Each structure stands twice: as structure tokens, then as C-alpha cells.
Image 1 (tube, helix red, strand yellow):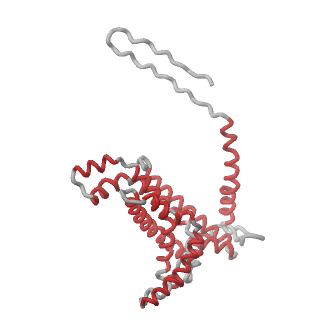
Image 2 (tube, one colour):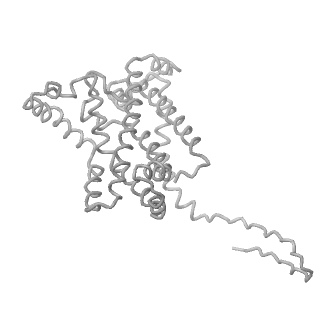
Image 3 (cartoon, helix red, strand yellow):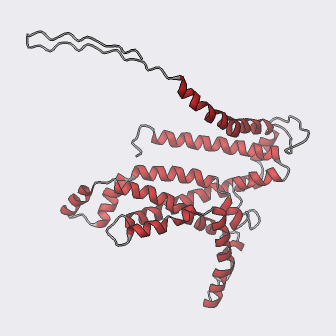
Length: 311
């Protein structure tokens, strides 16, 4: 690759600094081999993600049931989706569940991270124990907790004579969502915990030593030093968590199946159920609406974090 050099004129011996001569920038040529390596991934992504999405959006304007003949019907599916109580309920449940779970997961994970980075014994072993739920399948976790909430906990409540604990929380339409939050948080806390541990370990120890000299207590150090310095990690965890919880599916299927009734049916579960129930085009319109909503949320999050040192 050819390089361009610039000759600098020596400064005259007059005590004055010579004017700086700008050095022209050389535009690097991208080698063709890079495009060759990019091409397979681009083809796979297009065939597996982009093309099916475009086809699905097209069929959302039809009356297709997933196979056979179909007709173009315009925006009828979209208009019906906006007035469908079942779909509106699924959106209300999903966004409420995601907001509550994000708060629970981040609060518990942050406190655990503070404890696991302090001067305690066996903290390495404890970190290993706390990240175990992250490697277990969500559907397996859901079935295990389903048994606990349906059998073990009511049996314990009956033996203790506690009335409200003697009935399964999964059978209560007003409280079943609490069980989903508990199980989802149990699985999601380890990943959030690791990010917070990385953030806490990046804080210099001199900061806390100076705070100790100034007489700051542990609570003051936590609120005025630790929290501001890990604020970027909090933003990352909130964004990743909220986006992940909006797609809640496997834990809900294994825990409540969307019940009692449709009280805990998420958006993803509503869409998948419609695909298998002959409402392909209708639920594809719902999926398109959900996709646009998530794009708007992503753009808002980018706008909030743009120009800031998130990490």
C-alpha cells in the first residue's frame, strides 16, 4: 500500500515557531478479503432473520392462516388488533411485568454484588453458587417452581396453619404474576450480578480510603460514591433487562401456561398461540406492532445514552 509523506520545513533561527504543516490523511483501502469473510454471515442473517421478517410483515396484510389460499385485506388485522381486549391485556401484563422485574432484579443483584465484593470469607465460592441459575434452562426452572408453588408451599402452609399460604399462588388470577416475577428474577439475577461485580471491581480502592479518612460511613459511601460510579452499569442492566423481559415466554409457559385464564399471557405467548391456532396473519400483525414498539423503545434508550460515557 502506497504511503504519503509530508516534508516539514525547518524553523528559522529567529526564536519564532514555524507554522505547522498539515499532514494529509491517507484513506485506507478496505481489502476485498474482509467482504469475503462478511458475506457468509450476511447471507445467513438475511435468510434466517431479515427475509422471514419481511415475508411475515407482508402476510400481516392478508387473511392467511399459515397455509393454503389467501387474500390481501389491507390494514384490517391491525385495526382489529388495536381493539382486541386479549391483545391489549397481554401488552398491559408484559410491560407491567417487565417494569417490576427490572426493579427487583437490579435491586437484589446490586446488593448481592456489594456483598460479594466486600471483605467476606468464601466470596469466590459464593459467587459461583449465585451464578448457577444462569446456566439452567428457563423451562426446567419453571417446571420445578411450578411443583413448589402447587404442592410444596401449600403443604407447608397447611402444616403451619397459615391460610393464605395453603393455596397455590398460581391459581390466583391476581397473584399469579408475582410467581412469574419471582422465578424470572431468580434466573436473571446472576447475569445482572456479574455486570455489577465488574463495575464495583473497577472502582479504585483509593476512593474508599479517602472517604474513610474523611469520616464517611458505609451507607454514605454506598450512596455517594458507589452508586454514582456504577451508574453506567445500572443503565446497561436496565436496558438489557427490560428488553429481555418484554420477550418473556418459556418461564410463563412452564409456570402458568398463561393462566389462570389469560391473566399471565405475555405478548410473545399470545403471538405463538395465534400461529398454532389458525390466526397466522392476525398475530403476524400483532408481532409487527410489537416490533415497532420495541424499535421505538430502543431509539429512546439510545437517545438517553447518546453522548454519555455509559461504561
